[in-house]
Length: 362
Image 1 (cartoon, rainbow, N blue to C red):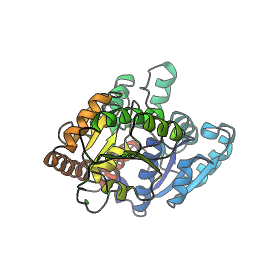
Image 2: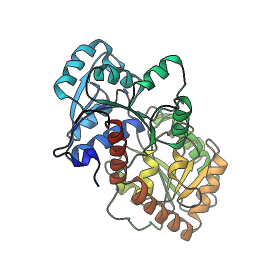
Image 3: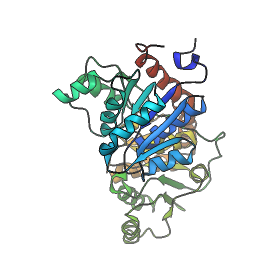
């Protein structure tokens, strides 16, 4: 039996608010969800900062967007935003940041719509007088991983909390593993992503694995610094930085093993999901929501963040055991299909929306 959202002809109006000024895992989560909903017949608008990467991406993907200037949630334009919301008449307002949550409650006041807060913040929620007040006026919370789910339930025992992991599109087929020992990483060049840990691991591995190559795709402020680190470590010609890649799936297909070396955060790890969807075994840090995605020893190998020795050991275990790397990659692809494919993501979210709107008039 279809849910209420599935059963209403023509879909319903859904407003997403994601006002981060930078590219992030949560930004990808929000945009991916909004595009899925629009593709299934719902009328979707996406609001955020006018010049933000997330709003540009939402526009590029064909979503109706509304941007503002003046910082988080565009506080000085709340009047015009409320008028715009009155014209759009959302059934659900899904807020993806704390400031967006405040705006969503203001837009929903005295209107027949539900407020859903998706929580993918690196910081755990705190139970105080103000946050409990806000939680009491929120129809549902979505946690993107198990630790945030537990934290929300602990902080707000009366709230409706559901866990919905991100789902992503993947390649239709898995490319054959390359014969060469190529390790790949896709991440912005930022200290939190752990590139220096990877460089340290590769310095340990180079003497053990002939022909080893490492490709770190991405852009960021550490480009020159990391190139220098590679040279100092004697890894010139082994580690390269090709910049932003036009086709991530082709990049991953050319790699034997994927790496997510983050030192923290990773409430949502799009990169880990992309490696799984590509059928590639992953060596990843045990941080944030990554343990929810990767099952250690089954779909990848988990290591302590910042531990170059442990990362080197995990990469060696994968690169030197052809059967292991193939088995883990195949298991990762299967897990993506069953738990993190787009239809799973969409349907799990719509169940939350159904419950959140159950009290509203039809």
